[in-house]
Length: 185
Image (tube, rainbow, N blue to C red; front, side):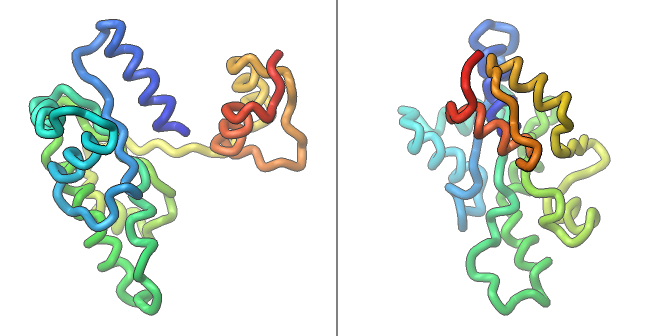
């Protein structure tokens, strides 16, 4: 949900002429087993119906794209039974394509990576696996408090409140708002 909102904002800025850079949203779940950044971008371009996939790769390499990379925490979910002793090795290998995007991204436009904070056993493992450096900014999302829920719902034009017993996770609240389960004001 967060990357979706970032994508929408960057897309709007691009179409309003506020920036020459456009966003590319990649869900890594769609690229399981791929370990080459160009192949991932070309497959993505074909999947969305982009006529010339290699042009998307060139635009990214030239610095005309913001990369929004989602789901690093979903890359190793298959085939790891019985490997818990070597899980950090498996996770490192699975992050190969993410490290390629980080290393190959033009310097003036860093990628945005998203996934669960506790997917890795330690901050050191995460930084190594994702090739994050001191240049990275790490942001985390916590659960909404009551005031934040109301502010979010009001911004979305919704009048209904969320029951107290329901978890206040932003992803869940966003889903309820986007799906129409909550009533318009």
